[in-house]
Image (tube, rainbow, N blue to C red; front, side):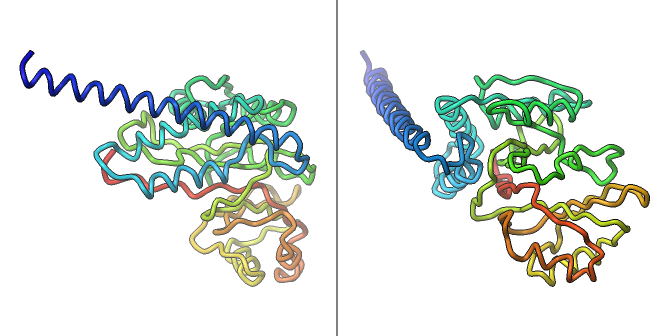
Amino acid sequence: MSDRETDLDDLRQEIDGLDDAIHDLLIRRVEIVEKISTVKKQDTAGNGTIRPGREAQIVRRLLDRHKGALSRTVVSRVWRELIAALCRLQGPLQVAVCAPEKSVGYWDLARSHYGSATPMSLHHSAQIVLRMVSEGDGVVGMLPAPSSDDASPWWPYMVTRVDDAPKVIARLPFVEDRGGRFEDLSAWAIAKAAPEPSGNDVSLLAVQADEEISRATLRESLSTSGFDCEDTTIFTHGSQEAGWTHMVEVNEFVHPDDARLETVAENSQNRIKGIITLGAYAVPVPAPEST
């Protein structure tokens, strides 16, 4: 055997050893997750199987410490696959994807984020997905990101004060992959899970009014109450007869019982009649320079 063949054989044996070590660590990680699952089942105040804030923190931390030739996109995909698999070990998880037109792109977003083995179904109606999330156990809904020109937006159906109503929990893609996108699409994930802070978040507030209110007035009322909605999007739906509902993005995590919510109506000279939270999402990680 030549020196070159000996060197290659030694390197391959080293890779085999590293694979065994990685595999052993994966086995250990599963064991720890199983212990966490046991504790969660004993804790009635737990947040359930889906932990969007914690998941975002894990991926961000790993990308911040990453170095070497392996791309950050690959690191993210590996851990998203692992996170999804371990979520399924703790409880039911399935994804209902709404793709009214561009089914391939939305399906790919869901598969990339929630793993290759997670059960998924495709639907052309947002109402069907909303119903599945509301009535199902462990169902995550994937819906096209709202647009200001939506003729019949899905998000007003989430404006309710029911305690276990679906909430927005994530915005996808969380880590942009310039080389792996078939279509330039964005989606929001909803679930019957309490949103939680990740350290860098956008919250969604539903503002209801009997009369039409300008975006400038909305921003001023929210800013006076202490919310940061500068350079964020406001979506509006309604009519003079039925009333108006606005969904406002706020640059922070807002708890449903935040005391500032009660002051917004007063700061609008009582033109606003109600305001509730519709969820929150971790701010996505910018696309790396190279993938």
